[in-house]
Image (tube, rainbow, N blue to C red; front, side, top):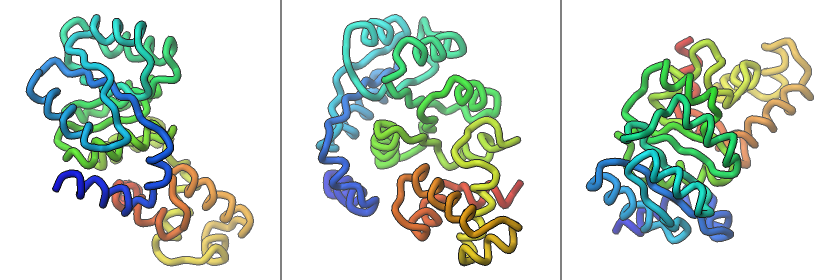
Length: 231
């Protein structure tokens, strides 16, 4: 039943062909054995995710980084012998090809901003269900950013913490979500239609979708539209 749910998730996102092209090698770092085992078991049900290592302390993470080759590091920040403020930026510099997906219960602005500045690939709250873990792993492995929905309002505070979409792209996206055509968006924002189409293409690329309708749906699901309207 769980496998059926994962297959449905792949089909619903229209990424089945992409997912088949590569095996995503993942390391799970968490100092609590039971939760770590649960994560490993759940994400391993995806046929294109292979857990190649586990760590429970900072030194163990570094040992895996220096010895192994993998794509995504699922990283709990609260581990013995690990200082995220110092070590996450260092990891990014030394191992730029490893996509760091932070898993934490900390949704404070200070923490989100600090890690965004360190250019982590994603910030996943521990409260998320396992389908979201799998979705996040696939997204960051493909070079995209992934942030839990509840993080986005914090991340977008001031428009500097998480550069998912620019201010102008959000203005265009909001208008598109309301059903405006490119001509109507151009008139409302006092820019050229060609400029609107340029921003729309960037939005599709950044959200990894192939239509404006899909972009609106994904942005709504992620909380981008709500967060922007609340500003």
